[in-house]
Image (tube, rainbow, N blue to C red; front, side):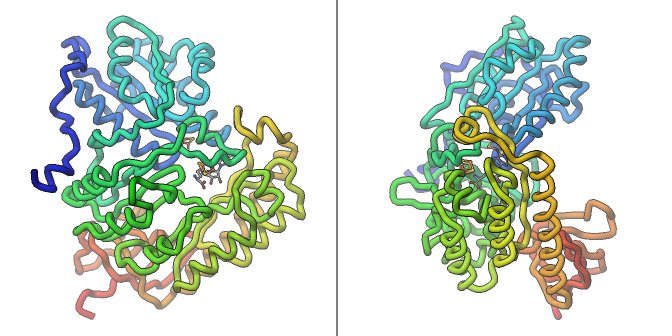
Length: 465
Ligand code: SAH
Ligand code: SF4
Ligand code: F3S
């Protein structure tokens, strides 16, 4: 058997005999899917599409044409829940008028389970992140027999390794390399919605990356709730990252989200040295105060975090971005100042700032009162956002007159006469179209003329200069 045969995933086209065939009645039903939340959910939607397509379902981008409306949901903060309820209300009418089948999938389905089904009788199907293989059958039952159903058991082994995701074309692709999380940070719902940590066989991952490269993908993002705790036999995350970055045709590899506790020197080295691994690390801090970090169950102190940042920065310019939670249980102004202190000393390229949102079932919800008022959370968040805007603007402006390497992604959102792409640090770059062609998926050099906190504006350096 050749090595390429060994690496081939099981073909989706050959339906195992155990899978019941779909009645002609259901074949061809149109499905509309809306995806909320993180990139992992985007990836899961690609898996769902593959599973449904294989069973004869078709897809529509218009909710009003659909026979089945699916929401792949997020539960990370309360506003994620509220967004879903808004959308559900819209489709409840479609259910009354046209009898569409409504399915809620993903993290919220897993988190709320029966409550959601009981509180909202117009939901037909509820499927958590480990139950997607059951979705086609549950939808068939709902369409043919008006049966309601749910699949919300978590699995210790499901990685969907044999499913070839059904992706839309483009130069960006993502691959889930591990699923679940065992960290149980006290604020976070993910260990409850996604279950225990499990890593995929690297053979399947590398095969998927090669297939993406063959399809024209130039940038791959490796995904996991705790991506750098990936391990499979002798493989750790650094090996995997290098393995994917070595694949011919792949220009850039990124990864998200890593946890600061799993950063061995080999991983820093891979980011610093490998020509196809982007010199950018998203390194969620959450808080800069030791008492709050301890309450959060993050397993590092401010000093540990800063030590890691220093180790990274010793390797030359590597962009750092972060996530911060403001107003976690008991956070005082003084403790918030410690977060501000880390922001000042590190000067991140970008920061995603969230107000703490209590999640049912989590350790924090059980142990600590959510006692920082909403206005104080908001005010702290605004102070961080304002600070970060100034730092991002300063960093971006410091590039004026310098050349940055950009992966061409297409027209800018605002104008057909401009191109758009991202720098290695993941900053959006926009430049005017000129006579010189900029093929989508190519790497070009752009001289920066101007900058805002989030965007670099520039002009193309002709290839022969
Ligand atoms: N696995 C990643 C986090 C994924 S969730 C990590 O460990 O960093 C993305 C971000 O959402 C988190 O980094 C955190 O900043 C934020 N977040 C998670 N739970 C939250 C909550 N209950 N309230 C507010 N923000 C939260
Ligand atoms: Fe949530 Fe912590 Fe796991 Fe990230 S590492 S997904 S914050 S529990
Ligand atoms: Fe949301 Fe689940 Fe992702 S809670 S952030 S969709 S892992």
